[in-house]
Image (cartoon, rainbow, N blue to C red; front, side):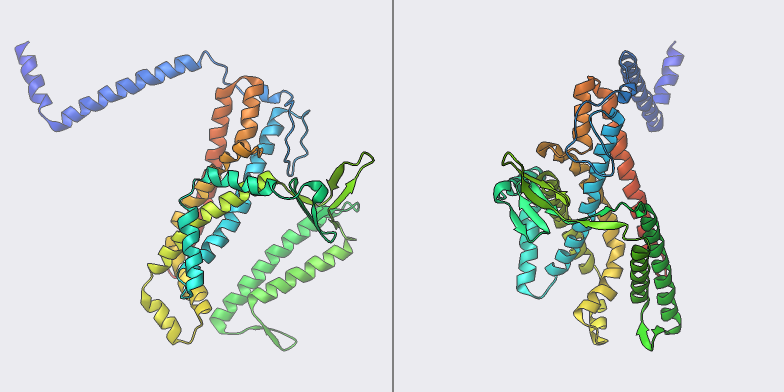
Length: 398
């Protein structure tokens, strides 16, 4: 016995052996905890079979899906997912544009522009996003009542019920889908031709000539897209028509609005808040990335006679992309996850619709797992897409 204790004492003097003991003890506790969770979970119904039942509730915002309360809960859930993707996609595009412009403005020698950009960042970045969402909702709800709605001719109607804008809707010719396919093919063709002509110009220095007019690749691609679109539009007998908004009173004197695209206060509030808040962080990313470049780049560009606009767009921003994209990906992910705060203003995004399903079914845990999986999928898709772009801009020789 003493021999065993002596050997054990010698064995335990080694730091490596002690670390092994700590790891075994830690794994033991983890195993017991996991076993406890599995035992408790086995008593619960974790399936999503109840999603096949009737939803029984309406959704104020629907896009791409014709949803009604008689649809099943899967339809309601996917409507919430589409509403989330819709607001995130638009917010990502606009926030990137605003952040880039403000980031460049912060480096401007114009005191007015740089001061506005500085105040934009310092004030809005240090204000909670939730407060900004509620603030923008209050602003939209303070618009005139529908009986006193502002109208800009026959094109725009502005009231506290929302902003109605002109909208293109499919006509009765049943050729709208064909037109969309043609537009998609025209975009692909325009990009390919534009890429080919720009590449040829870079290698040979030869520009494309049309009626003795020199055209670069971008302009040629744009012209091809416009020509194909216009011809297809008239050949298919106008597959889309402009749906203008209208404001009228019914027989009971109630004001009603119809037609056009409705920009609701809820959608506007969450969109404005996400764009402006995320734009402040993108502004600092752009500013810091540009300032990280050697000053010799700017001096060389100016010595070649390039304007400030050319220096920024041709020399600085393309090089700064290598350090812009990684933190920019984080901001896109944060924006996607922050969209769940729209629940406070009753915008029916993913989390709000899921919470309603929880209350109706009484089964919260499986719905929460589905929410986590959906947000994880959206985040992974954004990460993969941005990593592909990052790999392209960091490639040697580009």
